[in-house]
Image (cartoon, rainbow, N blue to C red; front, side):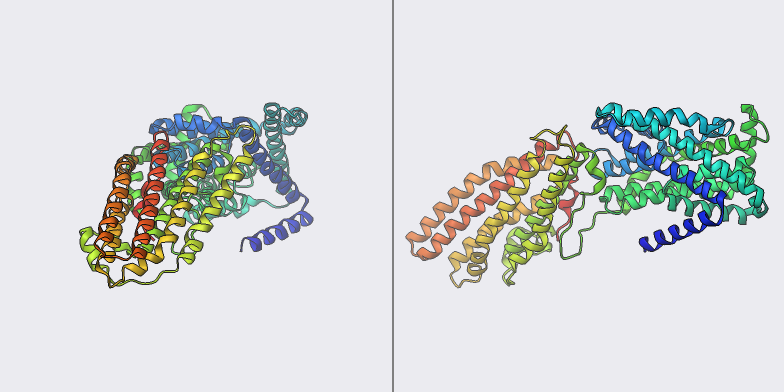
Length: 587
């Protein structure tokens, strides 16, 4: 579908270019503008390096700090889409809280108006093409530098020049169109016109993936008298809604928290658009009053449009800012993590957006390892012939063992291939890509814990595969003693699994790790004594005894590996907030 839409857009552009020279100038200028925005994003990524996420973590611990971060970063970068995607990826990776991400989104909406205001004030009052030339010349020369900082600065300067150059061509194109066709003749009054132009803005912004581009087109058309102020106001309001499309697309592969933030973004912009369109004429009267107080001329519609866009977002923020806590609570209650129902397990946290940030990548990998650990333990659960209800119910563990007498043979290899191996491969591949992407500024030990947890999970399943056949065999044995001993092993594992699958925070992980460190030794000693006692009384055969000793030893290894993982999680979560809610769901 996406390819079909792209093909239709290309056909439409080709038709316009060859049909109308003025349309070609507008498309040419728009192309420069979009390309310049892309270069600007690359330049900021190059200049910021790993400093951006470090600064972000320090400036989003309070709602007002998050709001200011979104405002300032968008004002500088002039890309609310980039800041929104960064916020979604950082919230998804757990670098910032959902409330902090919501504050950034609100601030980003306000920051997006700064560039429009500057362009309305200065961009159409002189020959902007001549003004762009020095930026382009110096930017190109600096971009050829091999020094990262100089090259990034050159790309930033070049992007500014290309933005001005693109605006100049769009303005010239609209002025030429005015000679042949007057778009003002197609102006639509009333609510029908407001809704129609707002929807047009949504579509254009969604296609261009830039509300800035839509507003620049609107300013160009307004400056040449091609549209009236009412329709331009509706377009400005609609462009806010269209900008959420970028965030929605960016959140498709994001984690559940990233999707929650996207939903907050959509709710804010849709609510703002609904209220603004409903009271559009009263709002325009307010803008006229504010413009008068600021000394803006009555016919300076460019400045008025910038003021309208700024005021609408400011008023929206004044209301929604005080609802950030409520919004966060609502989203957490309504949107919950659901275990994937597909047969092949796929990543929940790894996506392309976080690769640009080494800190976000490390936390995403840590969270994905928790997903891998959960899947490994779910295979252990099935291998011990427990059901999901056995783990989650409040039934006494002894009663669960006594009732779980009917066993179903499991396909361990199938569980490993579908629930563990694909996810394990994705984690390893993603870690290698991140290390290659950040080869120059990467600590060789940065991903040591990632590999350790993945390897410990693999060891757990390796041991479980060895003992699963004996559990299936001896749990159905006619010998009450050997059946009882294997049920005792299951009982201890059931208690441990219940503890893990009820984890809610790192404090509980710490408690489990402490309990495990003392139980592992006792577990081995008790098993050895019991086996010797049963053998001396001829209650089990030597073959049963060796199987019981080997399997209890392997279960001890499984518990030891779980202990190692719990230790790593506890240490890592002192400085970062891992998403441990995944343990509250079992597949």
